Amino acid sequence: MSQALSLRNIRMRIETEDPLYYGQKKLKMQGRDLVNLPKAVFKIMELEVLDLSPEREACLDYKLQILPAEIGKLLNLTTLILDTNELVEVPVEITLLTNLERLALSNNHLTELPNGIKRLKKLTSLHMANNKFQIFPMELCEITALVFLDASDNMIKLLPKKISKLKNLETLLLFINQLTKLPDTIVQMTELRCLWLGNNQIKALPKGFGYLTKLDWKDRYTSSTLDGNPLVNPPFEICRQGPEAIEKYQGVGPNVDAEHEAEKDDKSRGKGRNRAPSDAARSLQGSEGGRSRGSIDATAYRRGRAPSDASKSLSPDSKKEKAPKLAADKEKGQNYLPNIAGMDRRRSSVKTSGGNEGTIRNGQTTAPSRK
Image (cartoon, rainbow, N blue to C red; front, side, top):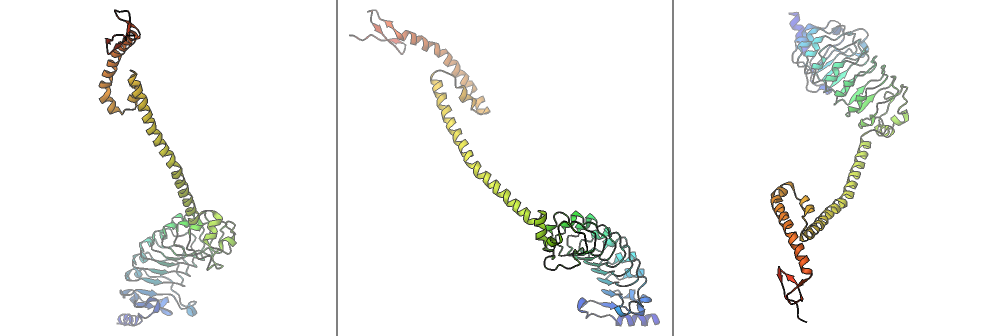
């Protein structure tokens, strides 16, 4: 009976007018209820927002020590707020909440996230600041829907290269950690607008940092952005001017790429203009050469020589087709040449019966002219 009454009282606390979650069924538990969290909370299946974060003025006295495994029953939850408690771990059952969009775990004592956290495919916002993380949770790189990630005030020493898979991430807070460098792949996270790296041990930014064109470093630079790092390359005064200044300093970035592409286009167009006259000239030379070769071949043929140059210019197929004819003509020409030579010899001087000279024309002797 008391259990039913407790459930009824808890249902009466559900609100839908919170401006942050307007229209969603929200339940907030606080004070002593956090020390001994009623089991009835996990029977309200319609809950969409569950806030288990203590009020600031009472947080020193009433905190949640353990999150019950029954949390996995609230399958309709889209927001789970667990800030400012004494949690040292999060139950693996939280990975069953596949409709979660916002998860707040800041200000606890967490050193890791449960295996299977990557199942939260709809998660867009994750707060895990002020915990005891030394290793960046690798599975977070698989939650590509993330837009906001706060991992500040931990002891993280290295970011994985796979963090670049978070293509939709717009805010990444990493200040107050132990980072000595950033992975080169971070320049692929082109949707980043807010990146806080202050109070780490970073000496240089990766080459190509200018590709992060949406960063607000120029307009909204704060001490959390980069201050507190032994940064040398690029210098602070360059970084404060934003990604365009960093691009100019490094010589790598989208604007530099565009300039190089423009130069390539100009060069290719220039080569095209230079090539055009030479092509035309070659074509003209070819046609003139063809005509001159034709004239030479015709002259050679009239003189009784075989048109060897002309035959060389024929295509393989036409050579095959015309080969018999050329051979016959050549043979005929060779037989004809001696007759011409003989005629020329006889033509020089032929005496008629009258003692006068005559000429031979078309194989016949003509009479000499009378004087």
